[in-house]
Image 1 (cartoon, helix red, strand yellow):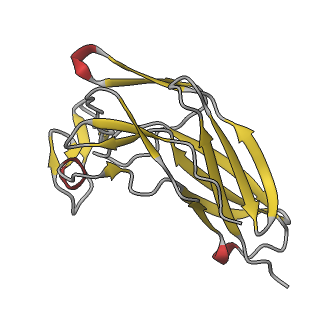
Image 2 (cartoon, rainbow, N blue to C red):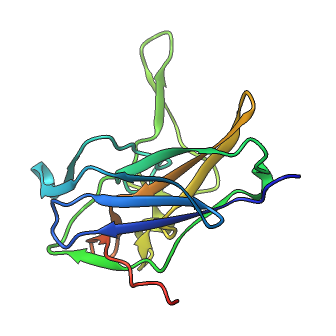
Image 3 (cartoon, rainbow, N blue to C red):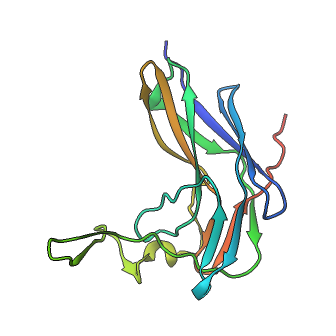
Length: 190
């Protein structure tokens, strides 16, 4: 019998900028893992770009997307978990704005050099880019990324099943140039 899996991600962030997050993952009603993440600071750097200071994070964006930090967690699932049913969600996210206006640089394009040393830049097809930014994101009046938790993969390691979950440590509202973090969650109804 295969087990259907739903990863519920609960993030509790404290009210100060220096605090990290407490993350819990569950399969059904059973808690799988709970961990603390490191804090994420943000300062204005040269040229007015947001400079995120943090440990143990990844930059997961595609070319032209805002270059924000993500926390990636690998979760060990039961051996009989059905990987086709693995999902994740953030229960009732609350966003807290960080004071100030910010500019978040985009993820750079993939580049290489030919045999003569000339740079070859590869831009994804089917997207509009303005100054290296994905125009559909940077011209949209909404926080990015839209999802507050992302299932980046699921697979097997011998008899065990694994899921990889990514949580953006900051969100960026491009037109207003605002940064937000996931804030404290409301208590769940009984």
